[in-house]
Every structure is written in structure tokens, then in C-alpha cells.
Image (cartoon, rainbow, N blue to C red; front, side, top):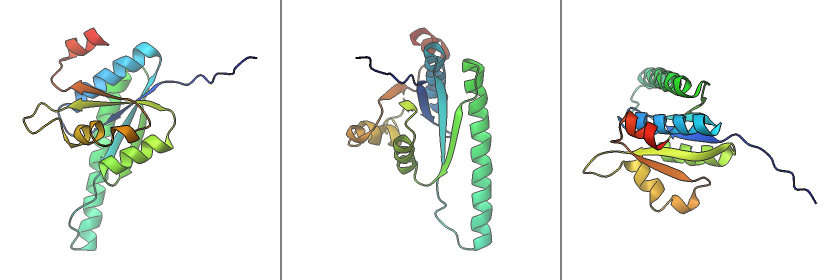
Length: 160
């Protein structure tokens, strides 16, 4: 009896934001994708505005947040494409970052690994890393790789 195997591309998801360590996670994911025949995916979440006194101000804030998201994703997409040779998959979502990440992981079966970088801080590795490697780790549908945010490009290149 022959078993049919579905060959799937490995997709390495990176949650992008304005932190310094995100570039470390992106480089790590892109190099892993390149060497394994996989692909990079980027998730950027637009956090809801906390205060919207007037509708016009709220609309303007939402437009500015969307422009910021598109600019950031554009920059990170260029880095990923430079390393892997292909455009990454891009997801821009609105809402709480952790909730949107969990929704995406459950909705998108092509994602095979989540790559995060830990902040170099006395306050901890960052809220997303803390929650996803703590009490939520058992509910994740994919493995998580946490990369030290202090790695330099040479270190990443050596280990990938």
C-alpha cells in the first residue's frame, strides 16, 4: 500500500514591528528558508488606537498606522527577498498582536515555523516571546524558534 505524501513548502513566519531585534529574526528565518527551499512570511499588526475623541482624528490615525505598516513591511520584504530570492508572503492585520498571530497560525496551514527574536533587556525578552514561550506554548499549532536578539549577521550566517 502506497501512502501519498503532500509536499509542502516550509514557511517561516516572522512577526515584524519597530524593534531592533526583529531584523535578527528576519535574517535567521530568511537564511533558513533559503537553505531549506522554504519561504518567509511576515505578519505586521496594527494595534487599535486607544483614544479616538473625534471620528476624523480616529480615521487619520488609522490611515497613518496603515501607511506605517506598509512602509515597514516593504522594508522587511526587501531584506527577505534579497536573502531568499523571492518575495515573502505578507499579512497586515488590525488588532491585538498576540490574538492576530494566533488567528493567522490557525487559519494558514502553510506556516510551519514561527521565528521570534528575544530582546536584550533587563525587563525580559519582550511581551510576545514571554507569552508564546510561557503559558501559551502548548496551544501553538507550530514550533517556535526564539533567536537571541543580540546575534550579529556573522553569527546568524554561521548557524544557518
